[in-house]
Length: 283
Ligand code: AMP
Image 1 (cartoon, helix red, strand yellow):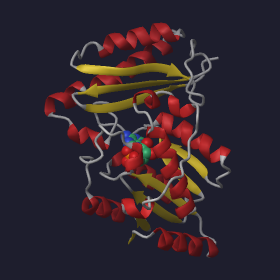
Image 2 (tube, protein in one colour; image 1 turned 120 degrees about the vertical axis):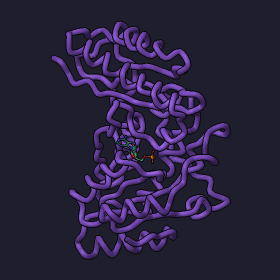
Image 3 (cartoon, helix red, strand yellow; image 1 turned 30 degrees about the vertical axis):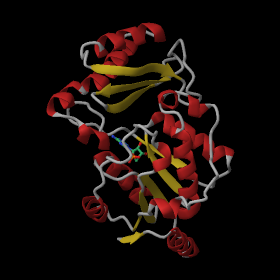
């Protein structure tokens, strides 16, 4: 596997792969890789001829009081994991390579960026869409793989890809979980043993909604109230939001019969975790 830190070199590699008639599958990440990330790499390996993974802790998507400086960075183990998955190229640019000092152009999906995590993380999605647009231009992928774990990001990147005519197929992969249900996340490394146990309440609140929905409960307000009760079982965890929305517009729905995205975000100590569940249409 080749580690590439220059954007120009990355683009040259992609162009030469395309000239050779090869398709490119791209997995953007911030590193500190776990099985969730690797599931995307495997999907890319299955679907494309050349697999490019990026590791870039993107300062533009962190707020001033967020964890950019302490975000886990583990290039050595990450690159060994990617090597073992037969990735072809690891794009690993510096902040200066991605954002030259006078860079002043942003990509924003206006309305969607204000919803769900956008409410408590102002500017976050603008940072995400800007870096993903730049990475798409640099890597020129045919397929780009994203995790359902970041459901709002999926909606926003899908919209950006359509609105800006990126010639990229967005592939969404299911959430990979720990045995006890906790969604895998690089931020789980921040949790103490006690917090790690408490954190399962997020997935338990979603499971509760899922079983009530299976029993025929369609009313979103009733489902949210039941989920909040489960969240309240861990009083030390501060709920940020629990919402039931349309997976594409991210607007709240009052009835789940047409399918819905059930999304939760909560602070476990100072660590903000998210999780979600897609409810299928029941009509
Ligand atoms: P990140 O490094 O957190 O920016 O994540 C990079 C990609 O991996 C994103 O598309 C995430 O949605 C995806 N991802 C992160 N955690 C998981 C997970 N537990 N299951 C599936 N995909 C994930």
